[in-house]
Image 1 (cartoon, rainbow, N blue to C red):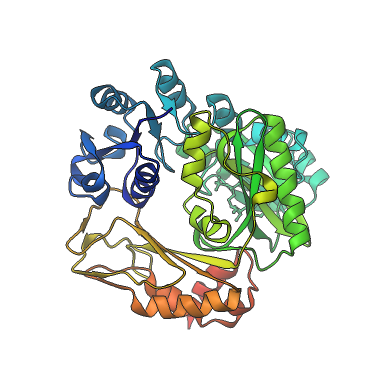
Image 2 (cartoon, rainbow, N blue to C red):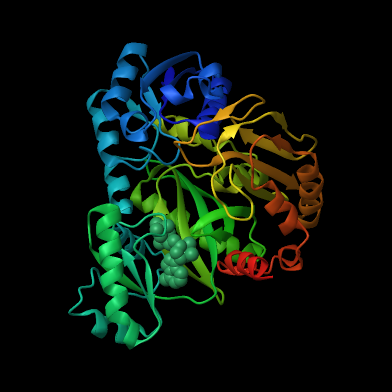
Length: 448
Ligand code: ADP
């Protein structure tokens, strides 16, 4: 059994994990950089260890310091949150070698899913529908042949990809050479690996992802989908569960395909199988082998605490639920609140002079922010998440409107006004949007 968890993260997700540990009676250790000494996750943890200076490389990504912090405090498990070391197979192996439980999948599964070509081949072999594309890596020499087979437009993607970098569209043969060479040089610069592959470019898809959890022994369940189509620069902004585009049969069908795949893989931990969805078809794009930012909307509609499940399966206790126990109830929306200018999206670090979080039925605020908190400039700009649940999508939207009016964060700029704007939009009200909708909408506002 796990008795003390070191949380190798910061911000709202460190707090999220800490809360789950407390509920399970597990002791907590926070780690922090010198810039985060006053952070809420440090204040609420049972113990804390400073692991280095502000740059992530020297603190939150510093494996030696984190392992040393485990040894000093006697932590027997590490929860990596999302980002930082959460999808680092080597980190999982090093913990293993030290006899510390990594709350996540095996290093092997992290590695398979971390390489996009291997992930896609594995998904296909497990019966998951994938985007038509190249059979492995594409080189400048064979790019034209491959593209002709797939049919234009095509998308060139980095094998080591992440965060939408190293991705280029070629609409016709004339664009291809340049798209391949820019994708390769971007991939080399971002990931130190210039390998690319090719996929059919889908014009107006939605981004729909399936939440799965496995026990590592061949049992796995799905917890339905999240629609994360509202994105800016491939970053999710607003997520909802269920997707306005799916009916119950479609949900249960794709969910079961993913759960069955995870059973075959003997996957352990929480994971997300991401798809593009167009004209009634699902196309696998990647699998994230960790907890995701938007996991609370799934928790809202299922009542299942995903971090509890992660800890259970990591300690060998198995899943707390069977598929037939999982009931989807109502609708949930998450808004990501970033410390950014809501029009230009330029980061806005600084001191929060006034903070008032909304409350009431169906409202959850996951945030490490508080009045007087100084947001350090070194990390990503997510300062909190607002999650609203209602019995129907309409009720959820009405509640969100009310809650956005109550939320006060002064002293810095935040993206709250963007959501006030979106909540009044007819396409959003109708659930009628694809992955390009938000960018087009924002462009139309700056033009006007
Ligand atoms: P990354 O790991 O870099 O985020 P993904 O494969 O998850 O890369 O893709 C990121 C985003 O790029 C998707 O959410 C989608 O918006 C777009 N995208 C990816 N593949 C395709 C495709 N074949 N056609 C159209 N858009 C795509």
